[in-house]
Length: 290
Image: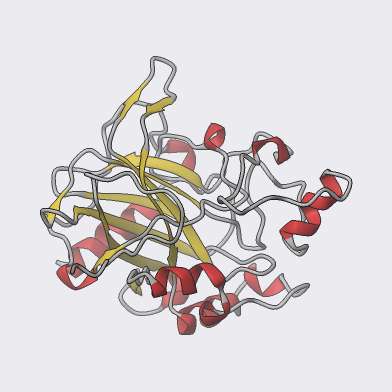
């Protein structure tokens, strides 16, 4: 099964990104396996969507690379209902992450090597940001209309969706991560935009430190020398997720079955509770039941 998945992904990654289907019609190049990896089932709490969340740039597509250079990453995300432990079909998974040198699309005018609070103060004449109840709407900070490394796609009948992207880089004060949101109530508008109800779950996916170190030694990542990369155990969001019972570490294997430097296949199963809309980052993923 793994060999079949690798072969299909090598084929997918050899396709020119310009030939990929990126319209709002749902006919997926679907995940290439028909089961959820039981040992990767985890629960994710409601976590910060970060300052570079910009829904207007999120595009309904599976190949989100556009022209961004980097080590190929074939990402598969399974979604289960934590109340029933069954796969969830047709829920929309929304992901976004930075490029190889730490920048986010739509915010390319903001330096990835400057602390965000400093960037914010520069834009507000020194006014501090109030994060007591989470981050406010920061969409006004956008600097352009680029959309690379942002995308969304629904799960199939097995509760799995897939994306073709690149291995993320890093930016000031954060470990390497991928943002993810899950919507259970959504439709596609006539112009291809997404209409959705409340977000059921927001999380951040992290990657094993040893693999990060290996990939960061390659081009173009190795050129990002202005700041030091933050490791997982020094990242506040990672600590928050770990303390609430979620361990959102991506399971990985070499895309070609041999060398990670030729590409990474990553998969993870995220558990969400569809019966409860959660806000904030203090709700336990695995609460104690008295």
